[in-house]
Length: 135
Image (cartoon, rainbow, N blue to C red; front, side, top):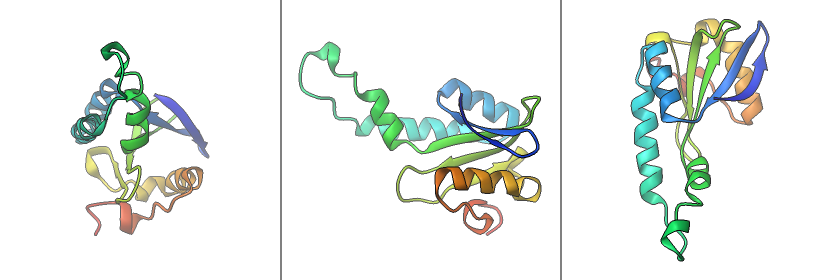
């Protein structure tokens, strides 16, 4: 995971970068981020058009392509490393999704942390738009 930003109260946002991290997040948080990560990766990989040239060099740009086209996945952790919330933010158009442990509403306890992530990313992350079970 990559560090993203700190939040008051000792909490920290990290970016989930690998399938293994997504698997761990799903197990820790009791939700389906692993499934969404895998689906997003499969779509991004399918959309990759390698440059012409030697076969051995065709996958060189894949990692950068995945980073550009996949949604960004984030996890909010407390100082002990416990999972508190998970966010999936599309790379382009689309609605971000933010859930807590077991798909519960993360805004109840972590609204300030979500505001910090929104400010860091420069996008709105309001509950009415991002929490799928509160609509």
